[in-house]
Each structure stands twice: as C-alpha cells, then as structure tokens.
Amino acid sequence: MTSDRVKGISIEELPEIYREVAGVLGLEAAIALSERFGGQLLYFPKLDGLLRAKRDEAIRAEFTGKNYRELAKKYGISEQQVRRVVSSKAV
Image 1 (cartoon, rainbow, N blue to C red):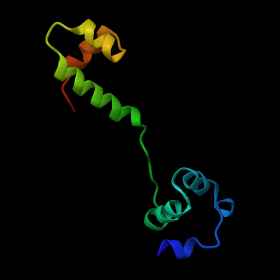
Image 2: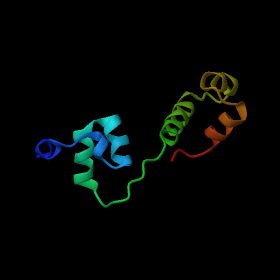
Image 3: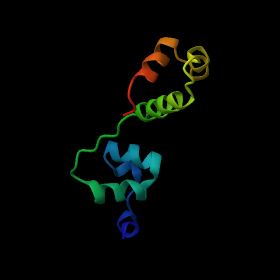
C-alpha cells in the first residue's frame, strides 16, 4: 500500500521533519509513520531514562550490602549514587 504512494516522491520534497525521519528510517517508513500517526503529537523520551532504570535494577541485583565502592566503579557513578539506588524502591 505505502510503496505505490511513495513512487515519484523524493526526500527533498518532504517537510523537514519527514526528511529527518526518512534519513534515519527510509522514505517508505516515514510515509508509513505519517499514514499511521499523522495529525498526532508524538513524543519520544530520551533513552537515558530506560538505560538508567536498567542500570539501577542491575545495581540492586548485584548489591551485597557492602559493595558500594565496587558497584560505583563498575557503573561509573559515585558511591553516594549507589547508596541512593539501593535505598530506593524499584519503579
């Protein structure tokens, strides 16, 4: 369905945001996203939050009750940050 609509359209003819999406995902994907989500406001959270949650989960799993310094070094954070992570509840 999408490929017929893409024929004859070049990336240069698209609005800027579509050019950016097409540059990352390809022209057909940009058109498919427009067809599926056109008119909606989309927000893509930064990956940092997910990565931090996974890191914190790993720290909690590896915490022995005494290894603050080891975990701080392993994950590149301060011992104080490790203490905050292990004392906080998993979300």
